[in-house]
Length: 269
Image 1 (cartoon, rainbow, N blue to C red):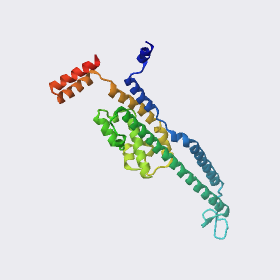
Image 2 (cartoon, rainbow, N blue to C red):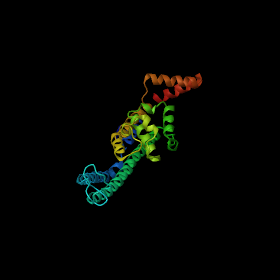
Image 3 (spheres, helix red, strand yellow):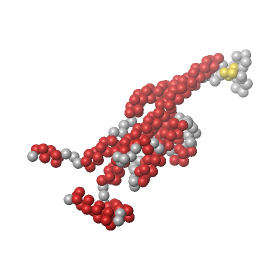
Image 4 (cartoon, rainbow, N blue to C red):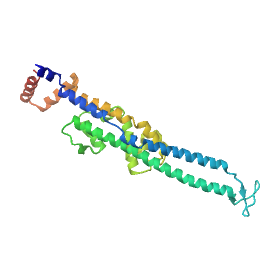
């Protein structure tokens, strides 16, 4: 009796599948962000420090102009070079500008990697969810975005209706652009992504702003998509049942249809 009681308390296959889909969706994590965030903070502080040093040097310039003999030129006179003190300051500023530009390039590189890794993590979980819901699908067939959309559409699941789809599509576009070029392409401009408005190339500030606006969207999308898959697999209202019945009526003759009715009756009685 105890064994039978325990068996009754076991979750059904449907419950297990639902839990698995929700668990997969919830497993999305942006691991790369956690790995690089401390170093990015250091580099951002370094850029801010370099800017402060440059500004301090600018403020220390005398702007005194001298002639070729080193004699100070009064207002209105012609001068060919700044004074020796300012020349030394300009040299220091040049070194600081070089360090600043190098640091910004590194920030852009790491920031771009954050965007690319965010979309890659999204792709992995998306394919896992689809493979979990459709056991006959081969994940290798889902290597292109359009293939994913086409497959889901063929099963009556429009990807574009899932919550935060537009944000994910923007992430996909920026990811593709970053991987192939530092020049902002027309697709990004057509989508009107605000961080890159009126820009021709990516910079660390715009990429970082985009990333922080978008980084929470994949998790929201995943949870919503899992519920869409669950509804597709296990929720059947009258309208959907009627559609399924009509579909089989078009494909089966009356004999086959009756066999299906009998088989279903036997299963559910």
